[in-house]
Every structure is written in C-alpha cells, then in structure tokens.
Image 1 (cartoon, rainbow, N blue to C red):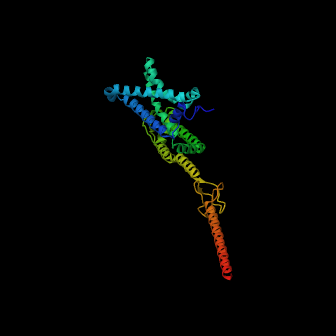
Image 2 (cartoon, helix red, strand yellow):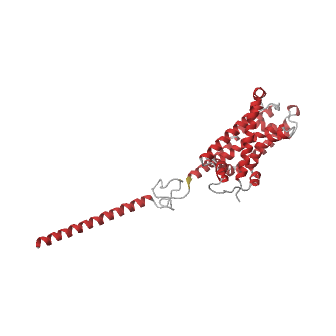
Image 3 (tube, helix red, strand yellow):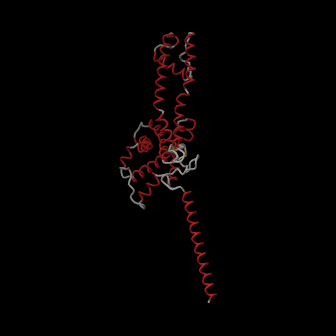
Length: 321
C-alpha cells in the first residue's frame, strides 16, 4: 500500500501532495528550489557557527535565521504528514526519519537542558537534498552508478581481500625484521604501518631502520602505486558497460543481423531496415500512400478518358442526325 492518498483532483491535500512530493510542476519545482536554499543556508550557518571568530559577532543573527528555518521545516513536516494517508509509515521510512532529525535536535536543545551537543546532528539536514535529487533528472545517473557498483562488487571485494593478505604478509615480515625500537611492536601495529606505506600517506610515526626493512618499504610503496588503479579500472569498466546498455540495444536487425543500435534509432545503420517491430515503418506508409495516389490519379484519368469518349460519341451522333 502506498504511503499517500490522493483525495481528489481539486482537494487541498491532493494539491499540497503534488507540490511537496512531486517535481514535474512549476509549483513543485519552486518548492524544491526553496527547500534546497533553506537546507544549504541552515548547514552553512551551523558550520560557520563553529568558528569562534565568526560566531561572536554574528551569533545572534545566525540564531534567528536558524530558528526561522527550523520553524519552517517543522511546518513543512506537518504539512507532509497531513498530505499522507499513512503518516506513521512515512516517519518510519528513511526520508521521514531524516525530516524528523532535521528539526528534532533544535527543539530538544530548547526543551531539554544540556542537549546542546545534539546541535551538530542538524548537519544531517543536508541528506534531505538527496530526496529532491531523487525526484529530478539525476535519478538515471544515480541508478547507473549504483548498477555499476553492484556489478563490480565481487571483483572489488576479491581485490581488497587480496590486498588484505598482502598487507598482512608484509606486516608479519616487517615485525620479524625490524626491532621494537623502530615501532614495530606487534603485528597489528605493523599492519597499520603497511597500510600507511602502501597508500603512500607516510605519517612517519613508524619508520624502518634496517636496510632490508627500507627495501621492503620501497617495494610496498611501488606496489601501492600499481594497485590503486585496479578498483578504479574495474568500476570504470562497469560504468561504461552501464552507459552502453542504457544507450544501445542488443536486439539484432531483422535485415542484416547488426546488433549495436542506439535505443532511439528506428533504422539500421548498416542496411536501413526498420527496427521497431511493434510499429509500422513510416517509409512503408509513405510508399503505400504514393501507390494509392497513383491509383487514384489513374482512375481519375480513366474516368476523364471515358467522359471524353462519351462526349465525342454524342457529338458524332448529333452530327449524323
């Protein structure tokens, strides 16, 4: 069962629902734009409010703006629940929980002493933007990326499992070679060092001292450079595949068998055969119209000839009389 109920084409709930929950009308687009501006303004104020040099002179202004946005968000949530047939089900959903989290910390700070630490939770308001983007033209691109990630998940998981084994082996080797004075006091600490070295971060808190340890470190760093491109390549290949599947069709041409056409294509690039089996080739219709036109013209010409022959026959008959 859906979460909403359309009360009628002219009902207030229906009109509000189309504005708040949809994005294909001018009113809905204006509402989404205003909501994005309010969310970004609120998040910006929370971030700037954490900077003491900015919060001191502008703190009171930030407070007024923040409470204005919080009240507007509260009214918006109430209107959302008013539009729905099952408001509790919406609150339990992901986006409903995000809407609730967007306003709840501010009211708790006001009502519950010592709840000021919850203010930072309001940064989760930025998650509300994803609901707006979900209803806009970004849906296709997001679905494409998720599909590519899903397809490449097994290869990436296998790759990271292999990396984990390599890191563990190098860590155990360095733990054996290096002394505790160098910082390699245990295998878990050595694993931390191996990951830092492989990613070429190089914090410098643990450094090998022996020539053999330094040589192994160089090998690990070079290995790190070479493996960074592997998951990127796997994921990129799946993205390209998703793009091709989204754009191209695998159905073969009935005329020549060519099977790599754009989905919007109506004719084969190789032989020109009509590709849409569920509709008629417009060229056939055009050809049929031309044939029908020729047939009509021929029929009209025959009728004209018959009329002329009849007219001449009548004239000859009159002349004979």
